Length: 535
Image 1: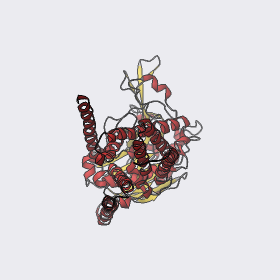
Image 2: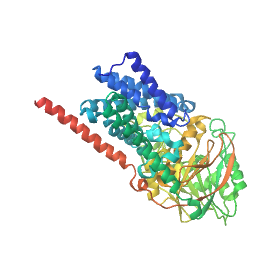
Image 3: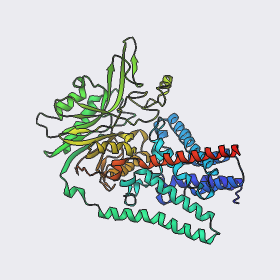
Image 4: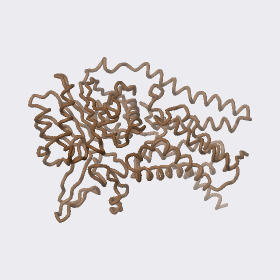
């Protein structure tokens, strides 16, 4: 029997939330703490079972842990929208606490020796689903903790970020079992050996892979890119009538010209750099597009342009749940957060953002409940749900295939593997991280791009309005980065690569296995309940 007073239970829950926060990138960055962050909560859950407490007590303690975790690591959302931040804290914590409660209920009905291990399947199942449903917000995925320690997770090229989640849970369970079995020498020694192996083997494997990886830039033709960070304040300037879209574009062009050479192949601008609402059916009527053609791209230009834009299309009938009626016109419009590819005097190619930010770009379940669109957060530009691409797409730039990734999309590892399978040789993230201010938010975002580089063994270029622009190599190492709130322009050369990692080929297969195991456990629980009733 394992007993804890109510005071000790709450202290352990507070400790668990604190450990998660201190371990997360840029809210502590003490990464090793994640290997014990679950342990206090597991001890509390064990004590509640032994004390025959109802499941609601498990939920309350879990909710305390996860609300601290959410607020402690993503408090900076508050800077963009107070209401949106509160909703994110409350509901993401609720989902996490409910997942832990499900684990508790399943574990109670499994044989004691395997019960605690069910956390692996239950939690990974939750994280996988959290990437793939209407309320998707996977910022706090356990595997993301290692984004600032790329040397130790080179094996992500086989597992993706869910492999990191598996590692975190495995080590935490072994630490918990070590404490639980401390007075039983044989079990203690066996668990200790397993724990040491569980921590060290993945690190050793990763370090070996790290030092065996060749320098890709030596063996592949370099691709010269100019990255522009215009540093336009999203609150005071970007949507200010006195700072017109044409003026903003003039600044972008002036910066780009500082670094363009006769070897430049691509110029990159950040998310929504083309402002004012670009009609995709008549793009050449847009002032910014005309300015780009006349002042940057020329008839004999050897380079292309990839830049973010706010765009829209008109439809004679409702095209999707994102379509909005134009009053008294019989037509509909649909707005997009777009990456556009432009060559001189040619019609731009458009790829719309697919993974949208909850509350700002997407209102969950609005297809079934259209009235929810009224609660959209206005964060500059349009509000309400945006239109999306139904599947991943890439640009073909003079026979070079490049993956455009808009802001939030970069945390979706499996989405980027789809772009890799389409032939993308380079990842380009365009973003506007100025909404959050000089906080951990933009730093976390850039560090997650390091994971995408490892998973696919692709170079990653990020062009931010402000925040961090720079280059990450295939080992997940940051080769260059810009300071926050600074106007900057960079000329970089990167290799275009076409090797396919195991993860790039197969995506989040670990999540699929977790769902299967979860289904088996549910089936086992149902069978036991029916069998007991039959008796």
